[in-house]
Image 1 (cartoon, rainbow, N blue to C red):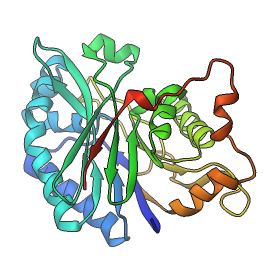
Image 2 (cartoon, helix red, strand yellow):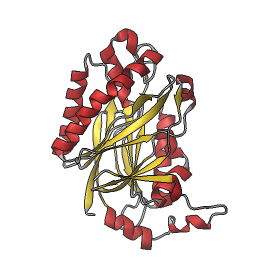
Image 3 (tube, rainbow, N blue to C red):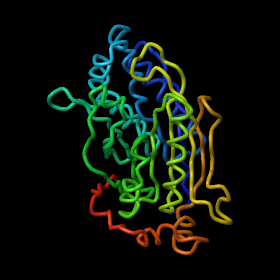
Length: 299
């Protein structure tokens, strides 16, 4: 696989009046990324919560009502993402949102749209304290998506802070791990950023971090958002001295772009300065994890 141009959204939460307005916003963001040559576009965790504003202030301002409203809008917005992925010939990780299950519970689901029209869904596995208070539950298992760009895994925000989850994805073959995030404060952002960099180092993979940013006082779910997008790899001489391939300006709306050569990454995995990925098994208690991952073709 040649060099892939990746784009991570540093995405501002806004209150727009209609779903049509959100479709327009999404189209503008995708157009901008594609105009810069991006092939893989990553939007953040809980970015879909901004759709609640289209249901009116009363709904958007009520936590349970806003979860239900956004869940009900996902199918319509999925059609928009699918159309954009097809028309531009790109892969798009849509902003995650609550997806209702029987009994009135929700999972936090992210959807990966391919130009072929196929869609892969990864649900968040480990809930934060605020998600538990919301009534959002842990979802299904880990999935590895086979795409024309390579094998892609997704670790939604807090999931990225647990090494075995991402390790399972990379043992199953993931070269790229997408990390959509939603954090209130700089402290939360830095936890996820630290996790993204650690996971890239441990398993010799690329991690792509996309956060929500900006204040949204109209929403009890995403009222405060802080962060910066980033694309990370393991530090290795001649590849990246710091492991930071690209990073945004904190809390400024923007795309962050990076070109990553997956062939070079695989060379480093086999014969780089260090062998972190291969030496994982030297840890006491280490066991194979790939069997916990379901492979899904999006080609």
